[in-house]
Length: 433
Ligand code: URA
Image 1: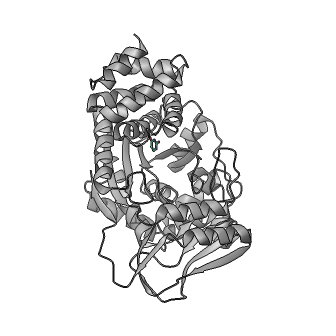
Image 2 (image 1 turned 60 degrees about the vertical axis):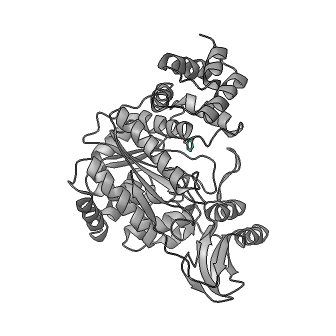
Image 3 (image 1 turned 180 degrees about the horizontal axis):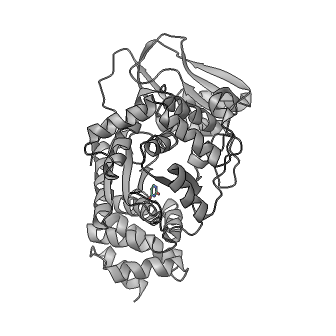
């Protein structure tokens, strides 16, 4: 088989078969196919697209390019949750203990990654002592014992996706639905879950800016999951403004814990209840989504979810005094304010711009080597739909450096869109696939 022929075939709009896709994925991962030929194929896929069969083959081939985790020694149906990413997304931190408190095992492999803030692991490391380093045996025992464990992703999970994603990033071939869906699903399938609930975001802070595109991506991923016998559900939700009020690592952990304490913002609660109810449904814990919602609400109201979170943190070496008293979590030295220049209704808070403001403060990584400042970030004081008077505070900027704080404020000034009239109602959850 020759790579040249595969590129030509795809360029001419023909579908690649399983052998050809396997050949490409395996030989590229081994370094035999050069980047320039892989780039040409990716660009041909970008323009000519892939059909469902090709997308499933690509997903399975990438999944099998490295270790496929075997979670069969964990009792019960393991349901994984994945978010396509957004600003202020602390859902996993709250949802893991909520679902575990309902008796469903949560065995989560998480990453750090680049971004406006750290990944779930970075955020959890705001709690002193907390660690995700553990053997596979300990990981499995922890889930069997307390129903929840979070470990760092092994280096050998889907190496083909790691290489291809880096190449897509520099060849303008990221935003193709088949390529995104196969990339995400290959990692989920390799992580060993029996069923998958996807949180697909749509809006300015998401990969998919457009709602129709978000639904297409959701459908593509659900089809892949169902094709390989893993029940998969996708919830499509809004990311036209950050999720909740807090953006930044320890600030987000605080907000997630507040939710477990029965407080916390409505949008965060709503997405946790929605995703959680589908997780319980796919785990056969409940018969209907409605029953799932009730069980999730009870887990929060009874304090069981909070207790599960404490058990989980303690089990992974974290100091639970920081959960009892959230003021102990890392705090920035200065809190600056960003005030409204005019009165009116907040129509939009461009989530990606708020993300960049957080990155300026030091909450995220520019490069793999960047060090994250866990204490800095932004607390929104007003969200879309709120009325604000001129001079009222729109956001608090938690910083350790005035220059960075002021630069973040300058950036934030372009994120808020304020008008004289009330905004139209926009649902937070657009639908379920
Ligand atoms: N996230 C992924 O893991 N892969 C993509 O292609 C896009 C988002």
